[in-house]
Image (cartoon, rainbow, N blue to C red; front, side, top):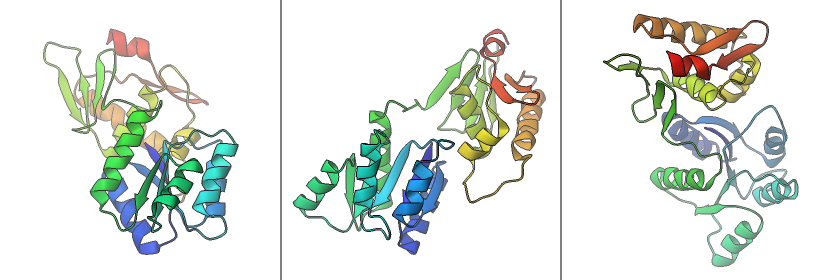
Length: 234
């Protein structure tokens, strides 16, 4: 899941990002409302949740949230603020925020509120994603392949898991390598152009070592596709 974090306090922003990344979220962190709007208005990147501080330079979190809703954007928003009075919470929720967390807070509560927003979101995906004989186990970061009497459990790296999950959520759809990069790598990471192809080679090698067919196809000149027919017939 990709999150946009908008927080101008450097220490807090870094701490939140580190916690989210440790939980396998993909995080873009910006420090002002105008830059955040550029990210949100970019049709190339899809976010699942935005965490927005109220008091931001250039464009406040409240104004940013109002702009989102005026553009009919249903993105779930968790508002962060030191303004904890009831009238402030009401103002934030009326502006379009879905939840409201008062500073200071503990990271466990932040994560719990994110999970709650995910459950309410139509884009929420279950922890176990299954197509045919292939299942992703989020709790154990593993791919389970049931093609023999003895099912295989293949451990994946975080990035391998994210690639598999992203393609499984869009079965039989060709997705370009650049689109995968924009969704699964931080926008400021500037990965090499062949990073997706390199990860795909590692995934295929790992499945081959377990005598399993990789259901992800390379469509020359176009991108990659999770072939549901291969997943069903393997």
